[in-house]
Length: 351
Ligand code: NAD
Ligand code: DAU
Image (cartoon, rainbow, N blue to C red; front, side, top):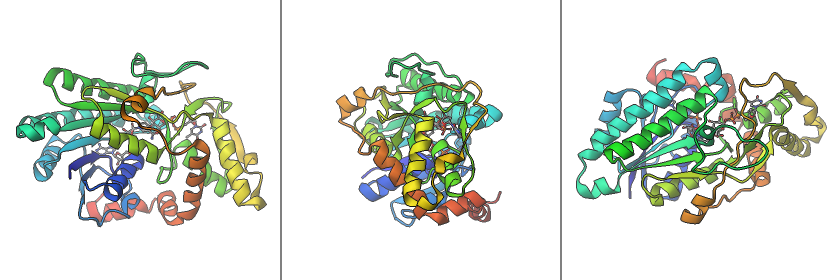
């Protein structure tokens, strides 16, 4: 049994990772999260009473708080997911992206290095710093081609530039100090507990309420979609079996244009609520995102070949599960859309 320190465990992907560790493995988890607007402890209600789960509210930029957490919990390894994650927010206000994604990663690397250097040899050899990153660091593709682990970095948005910076820091801490790191770069995730600022949950919730579905530009941009539970399984595998110093690309081989994605959601809702069909009549083409990357597509051969990972969901099965989850979980949805999920945090921790 290992103790894994997960940063950003109250977020969309982090909470899936934490739920899997608690439900499907004997391991323990220390969830370190600042609980920004996108952190939601209600996403962890099914596991938070488990004796193998601990929560620490902390900012990854705070070296004293993070070092104290290392000393208190003595983790065996770290999975670093905490980040500012939304591209549109990075365009309207980049500062927090630079702070959390770059300085936060730096702080965590330093705290990890100090801790790791003092570990007894056995534990030192087993220690891993797993950095969770994005395919957006590779820039934008045209109609052809795929991102491989050797694709040169070419980030275009403040978000992707901050994630690219963090990837470089992780690489440098391995090269210079020998910190045992692994990095994963993943494509677009979707699934339950996704904050409804992102395309898929926003479209589902707007369509359910009969609100417009804002599609940027002509809806022709392409993303490579991966069900979040498949990503979480890939992350656990890389943590356990990934080679030190290596990068693994993770993707669903599920390319869809944004318009196709929105139409798929509308078709499922038409089937479930025929009285409100056609939901696609709600589609509204709006001003494009500045610097909007055209296409992302991952070549996931390396993780498939070396670690035997394959996604379990197709886009069709995953998107249906996702739409059904949002319909079946009105409490989580209402607390997020009304903002009342923040009240609990403020009562317990202050504003
Ligand atoms: P998210 O926004 O849902 O969650 C981020 C979490 O980090 C939140 O719980 C938030 O409270 C926490 N956090 C933010 N700043 C913090 C700080 N300074 N200190 C401590 N905690 C802080 O994001 P997500 O979609 O779950 O993404 C998780 C990670 O995966 C990110 O690193 C992101 O770059 C990467 N990623 C996301 C996707 C995707 O499609 N969502 C794809 C590839 C990679
Ligand atoms: O590729 C991985 C990345 O995927 C992650 O690193 C990011 O954290 C994650 O947010 C995601 O970035 P995107 O910008 O691709 O995701 P988003 O859901 O914001 O947008 C998906 C596509 O849909 C994109 O082409 C923009 C478009 N879009 C988005 C929104 C919110 C719309 O057309 N309308 C919208 O309202």
